[in-house]
Length: 278
Image (tube, rainbow, N blue to C red; front, top):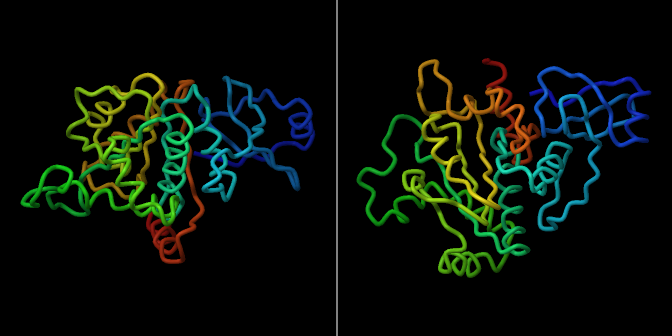
């Protein structure tokens, strides 16, 4: 999805003065964010109707992790909007997907007492089976798929992370939720983060989406280029979702792509190699 658009300088000046501008731009998503630029002027905007774009005025309330670029600022602004229940956040490894969304979820827990549900598509790299002979109960079997969340929580919480996370789990305020056990539940007053969403079929993904209830935000994290589903030409569940007209025109959804790498040179190297082989 295109993020940058070059506009006439007069249009940007109008946008600065009025805080909105009416334009027809094809293939833009309702409720999503774009950067309008011309020379030294850059304005982050949100599409609020079929033709209207509104300038984003935003002060980051999540003081544990600051956004590093315009795309990350778009994410934080979107997450603080009460009308958005479903955010799809795409990006390669190292772009900050898990860190930013977990920081937001912890902010919502501390401020609004919203529980945090974390999940991940339990499909390993390659063609192996997810659980198979792994000993232990479901939480022990599922633990290897959730280490990335724990690492991020340590970054956000610092020294108190171990005891605090244990406390949250004990009180059931933080729950690791296997996809296989979502059906039959309704999630309310919570933040639900689902990682590796590119490894779910549409049937699996809609099972999760349809369980989101009042005052709950569902955040899907993924990298479409790293799907392990082996669908042989069929679309993954998240591709079915974001390519639908219903999603593009919904006031309750948002699609954001993170591009810039912050993990290190090797993650960036993989990204560049993938681009060469497209």
